[in-house]
Image (cartoon, rainbow, N blue to C red; front, side):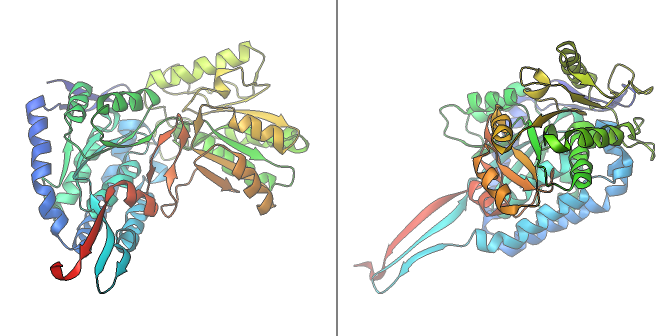
Length: 459
């Protein structure tokens, strides 16, 4: 067994530590989940919905404890109040649409035959959740998987060790059986072995591209269903008729919120030439006004990055860009300690030869480039290995939709950014991964189709 340690980015102290399960104990957990699945799926749908939503409410009752606990684990400032709003919104929506999303597809019911397609659960679903939005990303799959009749095994990131325990405690207290929803602590080798042994009917992973490849390698030949949300390098495009102030406020918030550690955060911005100088001026002023500091201090608007090594990656990208001719507009903040506390940065004079415009930063830095027209912006937006979201800014909805059709991405936003609508499929393309969560499609991915072709009368 190994010891998992969450090192707080606030001061480098150990925020939590847990022992991993042995391979045998991990196999026992998955066997119990499998044994419990049929009776869970046999419960009425509304009963499963009610139990899941009761578990969600129980998490909400813990929010005053959760918010500072999260700050200590991964550095998000307490002033933002945690994740319960989005956590609840997503679960409630998935409960609301469950009956329709999971309903039989009736093909025919006549004197001779009844034919229909039923959605049935995969069995045991493994959810491997990330640290950056640890509650919201987990509930994206946990809620619909349980509602659809699967049992769930949750493995959370080491950086947010306590989140899975919180969720399990809340859900068990609300009446979800312990074997139906389990939080486990696993090392990578044990996780890969379980996947390779077909312990799960479906695996959902949110994390790095390298992590996604490891999941695919472990699942190779097992035909296990996979949902993978991996890296991102999301662009924003500000057209000449955009509401400039709204575009600056939204895009810079999307670039800097959570210290830039957002799956769908904005990492590169393209601005129509007539607005470029004004956009940059306003963007720089916005970033200069951020308050970097201890996330437990209510005045802090920008906390440390979750780990010093993440900050080192961003510093290296910035240094490389500046050495190649880019301009850094933000002077080093006094709170920047060379470790996890990192000065946010706005860069101009950037090109797509620079890592900061091509590789995932996942930190508080954004490069801004002027563009002549839509065609140039589209080429640049598509010049990426990733495709999660793109944020367009114009008063012309038809123009935005036409541009959106040409962008290689999972979600197209118009005049907004960095928001996950649970009624829409959360999906990506290219190295961002495959599959889709939430919405009706999320239920389809967490179940399999089963066809019934019934001849009546036994003839």
